[in-house]
Length: 265
Image (tube, rainbow, N blue to C red):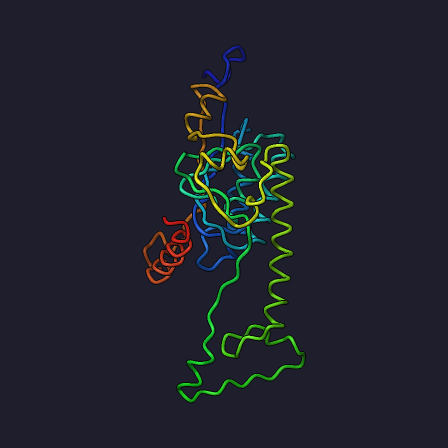
């Protein structure tokens, strides 16, 4: 009955979106724009929240998916005139930091890992292994660059130069976004965009985050002790809920462990 009495002050509602895992396009990645779209839209719409909090624990992944998710968050924040706060758990690095930068302010634990503002491409070369086993790789293309960086062919300097050009262009977009979102907060330090990462205290000094804080304490400080927190996150598929995707789940775990391991986690 309280909600029908106009003179009783209602507690603030804050939507809390958990963003955990690697970022990519479907498959074994935990976070993608397509998977998160209904979650994010529901969080901004349901209950008319006064704010949205992003709880992030991600080592990064696809720069395109990171940009799409961040753009969706900003679009809805401006459309609904809702403030967005980001809270870093273990790590918000690379694409994970791109997501954090979509918020109006960023908070972390002293032990959180933050940064790694850069772009990486990694793979393997197997042409010598094939040669030792008497296997010949045969590739036919209609265009000179169609087989660029084929892992079963010797690496070409021209191919590497093309790839580095793409990585530099992506990196420039990442840097521009961070500078836009953290305007007036970033320290004048050349290392900021070198791909390095830092713990929470140093990240605060560099302006990558706004301070040291945990979600519930900070949100209650900002919106009151009676703040209602509505929690959202990607839903598991029917097969996962039935335990029928054991192989996929194992691969998920291996892939995520490898991504988090880059940061000593």
